[in-house]
Length: 455
Image (cartoon, rainbow, N blue to C red; front, side):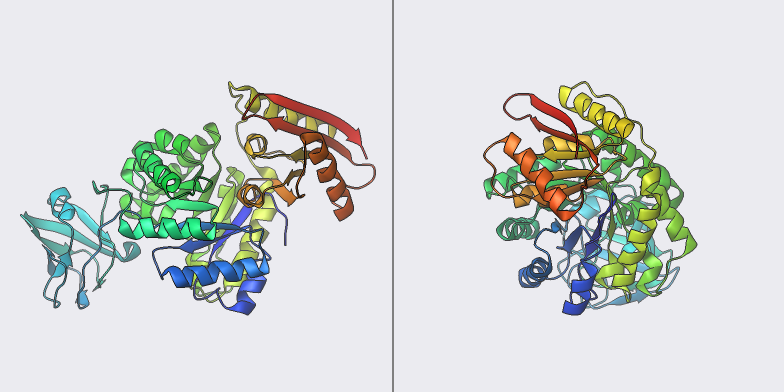
């Protein structure tokens, strides 16, 4: 296992689920993603269990399919630029038209809207809308197939955040003990709260929610969405279907800054190393892209197709780790002073440890104080001892934090001692090191402890 400040998450799929590949790949990552848009519960279960067989301390993120409208059952329709194609409200088609089994599509579209499909490769313009039928002209060539997402550029669909498919996926995530769930196509804090309420209803209130900002409503309601979430994802794939490509860097920076202002960890996803789906080395542009994200202070980087279906999944995580590790010490963030006591104290601890050259050692039961310290991106090694494996896996995706499990502890003083002793035994802390030892009790009453000692 490689220790780093910027955390790496890899999507597990056909290219990375093989035993020999998976065993090597998880040496370089801090978390794995299971994409609920593909496969079934048995495939998801097999992937999670295989990951845990090799590393049971790794973070597992389940990514919901999310609300959207997809084509119905149909024979493939191949179209060329300039061709016309009809979309109809229907569950299936013999290939003479594109079936759309949801009337919301026809209520939302207007003439001249751009329809985006096949991950942005196929674009069509709406020429005519009449009731539950529409005629579109192809702007690019491609093939329309069944069960493919239909995106209206710049518009979200007014449909519930959870459908039956995603409710079942949530149940699976809870049953197998996933740590995070990605909420796809979130539009406002109401969507986050609805998913959170569903998790409480099915007994999964420990699961943390990742708000995937990928559509126009989420961008408009950015602060609202970010502050309601537990983690934030810059989902560049879908952003690129709703916005012009030249707008994406600005939107990405805005999401990162808003997340940091609200004290929420943030990850960047999609096309970090897209060329490595086919090639064994990244392009220079990809290296620069990763470097910019790292220097803006993102907590984690998520590989999708590169490790799910790419030819070089291990090389992809190695390259991502290599580039992130080169620049994670050059993070540029504003260390804004928050109004609450916990964040003020966390900033003070980070600044003090950096000034005196001390390693930060924390004992935590809930993780809140650790999250506060991580948001200020400490430039010194930061270790945290926890007794709960769920807390350990959750904290593994926080910038600069290295969590360790220390077993059952009766009180905070014993927790600090055992954390420190375990770090000494492992060699992470050596004789002569200066250590800032701390804990914070936040949930019941504000009780903080800070000690500085020379080992």
